[in-house]
Structures are given as structure tokens and as C-alpha cells.
Image 1 (spheres, rainbow, N blue to C red):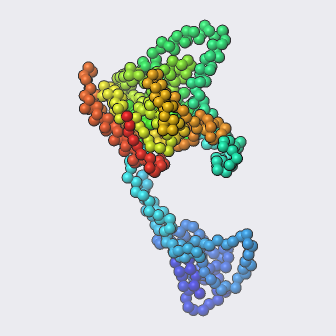
Image 2: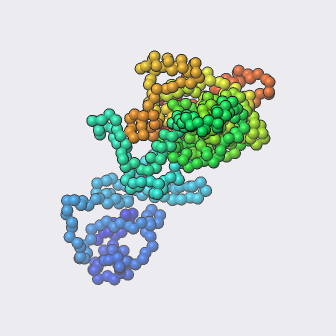
Image 3: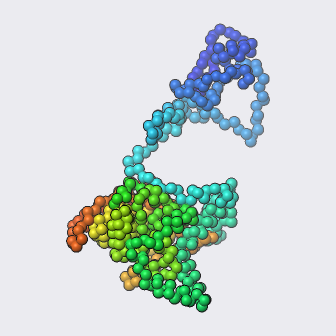
Length: 507
């Protein structure tokens, strides 16, 4: 009689004996199977390849014991699946081996792991720099009391499944958390229109005129957006939980390539602009992605057009979020005032370098075109203020909207460039999804945003009054471009960039 185990084959002695007449102790000495679990004594774990087997061992064999057996169940609805055996052959598979994998964690403790040979697939060796990621936005909202239909997974309808309609509407049974995410993104997208509407509604009430008239004069003449004092900045508003809902809509995630010293000052260059730069707002205007955790001791300010601070009510909202004007005066004041030494130490600004011109090239599923070749003003600013340059590349920013292409509508593209030249901004003709449908509207698509902060480029400050050397400007600009290309090449495959899409530096 022969009994095979998962890891070994045990052959009983050739002396004939009666298996039924043996006592449990004798059966254990003979290495035989017990007639019942009650007869089996508590034994130590089996050892497989020198490793303790803590899971129940499966015996596979053919015995001749005359014990009572249940009749086989031959219902066609219940088919017996083949069992997987270690170091043996399954009924329909190939021989598999048990492999001992040695693992060492960060603290130096050595761990042992068991796995099957067919799971031991070669893994690609990562040669990239390890990123440190910020917190996952919306994690605090993943609770049952905030989510409806927790047991029913949400599935976006397949557009191909409904051939009778060109517009695909959202289902009614949407989790409550997703409704809150949509509401926050909608509110941010329409924030300028909402604040203007509220202002004009109050203007229609004569009771508020004594307050609105001096307030309007103050908005038009105020120098707070470019003063550099950041007096209106509110850490409380920047850290509200509602911004986690905004960031988790896409979702957006902030990643750090290296630590930044809080004793320096920095200029973050954000690329690409996209349509509305949702990633820049989520990562640098709020704490939803954990900026202060990744870069402790650094006060970052996201810069936008100075004209946005002339809009009543919206101006106060933007200042409370820590935004400031992108004018040269504002940049120099922020980087030369306040901070640890009252000279800008520990401060940083974030500039969307491509600007409105780059927004016209924000095409999904196409080459990433960065308007950067002739943009050297931010490099000169860094040399004058002694701020290090930090490239930032947002994977997925251009995937949030569909836009009219210049090739298919050349006249529209020329008119957009004319508006940009005359007024300083342009209006891209874009669309994405709606609040209640997936095909038409101004809401961005739910596409992942991964904002990767690169390594800082050290800059030597020139003395006050000295002329900036153009050769040094070109040198720093070239190093900045190389760091952007490094981020792109190392992380494009990790963050799902399609094949054939390349990074191109234009204009």
C-alpha cells in the first residue's frame, strides 16, 4: 500500500497487517491514515522542503480500507474540480514545485514566503528613481455612512451596448461619494460664473449698494495679489475635506522624486497647461494630495492671471486658497519677502509655464507638446531671486477634455491665436462629459492625474543690479528640459501613456 502526500511519498513496510484493527497510536507509528478526525492526535506541522507547512496537508492516494463511504454525487450542475497538488501532477496540469522566496523588509528583517513555480514569472527590473507619493485623496470619505449602495459596484455603461442613442446617461444608482466628487468639480469649474452671478444679484438689491460700491473700488485698486505678503492665505480653507472629494474625482496623486530643503526657495514649473489645469489646483492650491507632507517647511503659491483678481468675490476666494498674481512683481515679492529669514527662504511659487498658448495643444491621445523652447523668463526670474527650478510633469492632464483640432478647423485656430495676442488669454473650444451623461458637457473626464515633481536644479543668484548672462540662462534652461525628459522617459509606462506618444518641446 502506498500513500502520496503533497511534498513526499511514504511507503509502508511490506509486512502484512490489518489497517482496521490498529489503534490510533499504532496507526500513527505506521504512518497510516486515521479512520476519523477524532482518532487523529494533535501533531506538529508537516515540513515541506524544510519549511513548516502551516496549512492542512492534502493526502491523495488510493486505499483499500473497508470504511463506510458516501455514494458519489453525480449531479451535472456540480462538477468536481481538479485539486492542485504541490510537487506533484494535477489531473489537467503540469508538474509544479514549491519555491521558497527570501524577502527582506525595510527594517532588515528577513522573511520567508512560499509560492508555486507557475506563479514565479520574471518581473521587470525597475531602473527608475523611486517616487514618494502623497496621500490618496478621498480616503477619509471611503466609509459606509457616506456611500450609498455599498454592496452594488458602480459600472459605467458601455457605449457600444446602446446603439439606439448617441448620448449615454449616467445610471440612477450612483454611489453617493461619486455624486459629491462630481459636485465639487462642477463647483470649481463654474466658480467664476457662480461668483459673478452672486455679485450681480446683490447689485440688483439697492440695500447692498452702500457696501458693494466701496468693495468694487477696493477690488480694482487692491495690490494684495502681487504684494507677496500672503496675508489672505487660509490654511484652514486649503485643508478642508471637500478638496479631497475634488482630487479623488479623477483621481489626482502627487509624487516626489527627491526631498526639497526648506532652507532654499523654489520655482515649480508645471507642465502641461491642459484646458483648466485641474492637476495644478489639486496638488498646489489645496492639501488634498498632501503637499505639506511631502515637502515640509515649504510654503507654495500657485500663480494665475492678474485679471482673475479683479473679479468680485472670486478674488477673495482665490486669495484664501493661496493663489497670487503671475506678474513679475508678484513673483519677485513672494520669493524675496517672508519665509524663515524674511527674504523668501522656504517659499515657492508654481508657474504653468506653457500658459494659454499651450492650452490650444491640449489634445488627448496625441503627442505631449510643451511650449517651452522660447520660454526663458522663468529661468531669468530664478537667477535673479536665487530660486532653484523644479520641473513638474502631470501625466493625464491633456486627457481630461476633447478639443477642436487646428488641422480640422484652421480658421478657428487662427482666431484663437489672435485673441491670445490681443487680450492675453484664449478660449479653447472643448467639451467632455456632463453631470448626468458621459458624452456632452464641460465636466472633465474621470482620468487619473499623476503629478510627478522632479529633482531641483540648483541656480546661482546674481548680485542685485548685475545683468543676467544669456549663456547661463541657456545652460539652466537646457538642464530643466533634460529633467523633464527624464521624468517622461522613466514614468510614461508606469502611468499609462499610450505607445507612440512622444514628448515634444515646441516654440
